[in-house]
Image 1 (tube, rainbow, N blue to C red):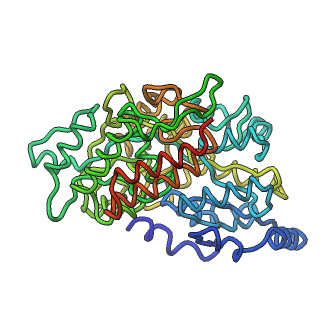
Image 2 (image 1 turned 180 degrees about the vertical axis):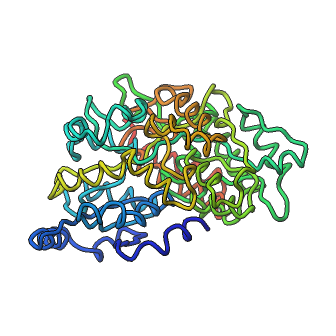
Length: 462
C-alpha cells in the first residue's frame, strides 16, 4: 500500500515510536528523561525536539521526509511519536492538560485548539506567525485559521484541512447503470451501496472503530443531518438534557448499523480512516464516506484507483448540508522547553515551502500534498492539474460546513459538525461508541447500546 511504500525506505534518521495505549506512554520516556535528552543535545551543539503526530499516510510522509528536508538544513533532530487517532487524543490531552514536558510539539485538531487555548495550555502562535515572513500567515484559508483560534489568537498551525464527502468508484456505478447525485441524501447512498454490494466488493465503508474521533466523528455527522443531537443546550449554553433516548438518535444509529452490517466493509467494528483507505485502494469497497483529504491519496500518481473515482458532497437527510470542517494542526504546549526551536519546526512543516517540496519528492506527486490549508495551494497550476477531480469539491464542502448550526437543535459549547464542542464530548462519545461498535459487531443490540449511552451522556447533563 501507499503508506508503506512511501515511508519504509526513508526513515532511518527519524525516531518513530508507535504507541497504541496510554499505559505504554510511561515506557517511552519520562518528562525528566525527555528534558535531559534535549539539554544534552543542546550542550553538544545540536537541537532536538519531540513531536507527537497522528498515524496516517500524510504524517508518515512528513516523518520520512524530515531528515532530508528539515534536519539536514537546520541541525534540528525531530523525534516523532506516531499514534493512532484515539491514542493520540488521549495521550496529548493528558500530557498537555497536566502541563507535562513530554512533547515540544503536538498534533491536535479544531476540537482541541480553541478549548486548550482557552485553558492556557498552549502557546499563542500569533506573534511567531505574524513575524515569520516565510510562514505567510495571510495565506491560510480563513475558515481553517478561525477554527484553530480562540479570542483572536492562533493556537495551532494547520498541517492539512478537510471537510467530508462521499467517494465512489465511478467505473462501478457506471457499469451498474447507476448515477450518484452531486448532493445525495443518505437514503440515496444506502440504495446505491446495496445495489453495488457484491461478494468481492462491499457497497460502502464507514468507520466502526470506537473513539469520539473515529466512529464518533462519522456517526455524529449522520446524527446531525438526521435531526438528532447528543444534548440540548441550556439557556446559558451549557450541557442540557441528554438526547440519546430520542427518536432521531435511534433512527440515525439504526440506519448506520444496518447499512454497515448489510453492505459494509470487512471487520467494520475495527475500521477507521486507514482501514477504509486500504480497502478502497484494494478495490474491496465501492463507496466511502470520510474526510476529503483521502481524495489526494486516491488520485495520487501511485494510486491503483487513480482516475476511477467520483466525488459528491456529504449526504444529508433533513439538513441542507452536513460536511464537517477539520484540520490536523501542530501546536506548542505552554510548558515546551524550547519554544523557539519548536516554532522553527512548526513553521516549516505547515508552510507552502513544505507543500512544494513534498510534491517534488513524494511518489504521489502534487495530488498527495497536504490540502485544505493555504490559498496558494489551490492557486498553483500544478495542484490544479493533479487535483482537478476533487480540489473544488473540497473547497465547496469546507465553505458549506454548517459548523455553527450542524443540526436542527441548538447545541452546547463551540460549533462542530462531527463533534459537540464541549470537553465532556471526548469521554462521553468514546464510551458510547464502544457500545455502538459492539452493536455493529453483533455483540449487543442497538436498543441496549442506546440505553447504555443515554446513561453515560446524562452523567454530564446540567
